[in-house]
Structures are given as structure tokens and as C-alpha cells.
Length: 380
Image 1 (spheres, rainbow, N blue to C red):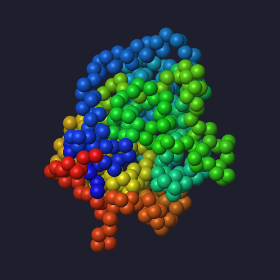
Image 2 (cartoon, one colour):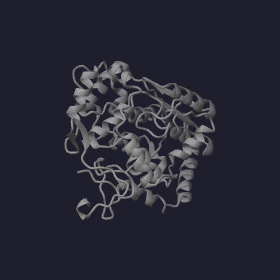
Image 3 (cartoon, one colour):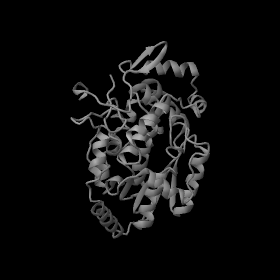
């Protein structure tokens, strides 16, 4: 039976989430902890770090910022290049199926910030093989992107001798994940976070892959980074991370939300809209764990005091059964998968511990209610 947080809509089915004695989830506890942090002091630490790097008079760049043109990476690059004055290289890990909005936003970001950019596009045939294998084996096709984003960015810092890599949010802290509940500055172990799932590219290789094609999927040894003097940090450790504020910031500078409104299952139109292969991956969390976009988005707004639980529950119950239809055909065509193969694989990965069939329809075991008052047996 699925159990839910008493303050937000998160369930105990999310990997790493547990409900404490007050029936609060990791994300709710982390949001309370953020209110106790002296963010002025944290910002001063970042300023000191930036000043020390500028004193090195680096021949190439002072810092490397991975960007997509999304609201968050736009704000990251602005802080490092404009506010802190670091010589910044923006690294674009190119999506293979970008959206119209994604192309526009990336171009506007580059124009706005006036920074050097480096674009990495991995070999399509290799990516398609890894994505398809990830889909069929673990129902997580975007694992491939997580792998080459982390590895590609860090290898770029090594290649160009860049002393600082600046990531955005620590997903385990911001969204209540497996790794830890307290914020840490260092992101040198980013390849071991929730998105990587404890796997490396070597878990997916077979004779059909050439070792020559996986450079950007190979995360370097931590000792190499330390010996090269490279620091990798989460910006969310130093500033109070707020995606909606980043959206307002970027919108004033040319960022556009999705023109046709929110995608299926979404209730906002500006989150992860730069490429077409992401939504199916996120929807698969619903099959495996019983939640996806509407829970993620509403919980984030609850944690930032923008929604009540009552409002969020209504949104989740309205949106969670919507199928991400907008780019479904693009997903099938990109991976050369038929509809029959797709849905057959979906049922192989459906979590029968949380799903049951009633009147020939799949329903979750445990209903999200507005007035959720679990008894002592719900505690975990």
C-alpha cells in the first residue's frame, strides 16, 4: 500500500524516500532545513572561491557551466560569468531531438550572456543503442543522457584545464532522493547520484559497441580530478535554489515557455521543454514508482510555499493519468520501436506491488487524498 507525506504529495515509493515520525518526507524536511541556512554566508564562500580562482590567471577558463538554455542553467551561467566575473565556458550537451522552444531559448541565452560556448553532440548510433537497451532492461532510456552529461562535462574540464565545474541543484537534497539529506558543496561524485543509479557505461556495453565511441560516457577517476586541481560544486549549496525565480529571471531576458501550454501530465509550461525524449522517461516513474511530473512539480511548489497540499492533491489527481502523447511518435521513431513493443515492455516493468487491475483497468494501491490522516501503522 502506498503511503503519502502528510505535508506534500510525495509517496514512500520514490527511491530513497522515507516518512519520519511526523510522516514528513525527505523533501519536506530538506525544505525546512533550507530556511535555517544563512544564505549570505554561503554566498560569501562562493565569492571567496571565485576570487581565488581569478587570482590564478588561468590561461583557458575559470569555470565550466553545463547549459541547455533552460531557466536554471541560464541563471547559473549568469551568476558565474556576470555577477562573479569568472571567465566562463558554457558546455552544451546537445539533445538529438530539440524542440522549437529549446532552440530558441538556447540561442537567446547565448546572446544574452555573451559567453563562449562548446557544444558536444555524441554519436547518434551509439546513443540510440544505449537508450534502447536502457529502455528495455530498466525502463529508463534517459540514463544514457545522464551518463554522458556528467561524464562529458567533467572530461571537458580536464581537456581544457578548467579549475571549476558549476552544476545547478543537488537533486538528492532539492527533490528528496537517495544519496543524502544535507547539502554538500562538492559534486565530484555526481556520477553516483540518483540519476546515475549506481551504474556506469560498462554495465551496458556488449560486442555491438565500439570502445572508440564511449569517451564522453566515461567518468574519470576522482583521483584524476583531484590531481588536476578541479573542483566540482553544486550551486544550490551556495544560493537558495528556486526554479520559479530562475524562470522569471530568464523570461525577462528572452526565455519562452512552451507555446502550446503544459505538456500532458504537467501543470507548468516551462520545465524541461528543450528536448523531445525526456517525457516518456519521466512517465515511466509512474509505472515503476507510482508518481511522475505532477507530483514532482506540485511538491516543489509546496516546498517553496507556493501551493497548499489541498491545491496540489487536486492537480496531481487531475494530471497523473495523462499519457505523454506529444512526443510519443518521436520516441518510437528515434529508437525504432513499435507501439506493440513499447507497451509490452511497459507491462514487464509495471510494479505489481503498487498497481492492481480493477474492472480491466490498472489502478494504484493507495489513493492520494486531500485530508490525509494516516494512523500509526502508516509510519515507516
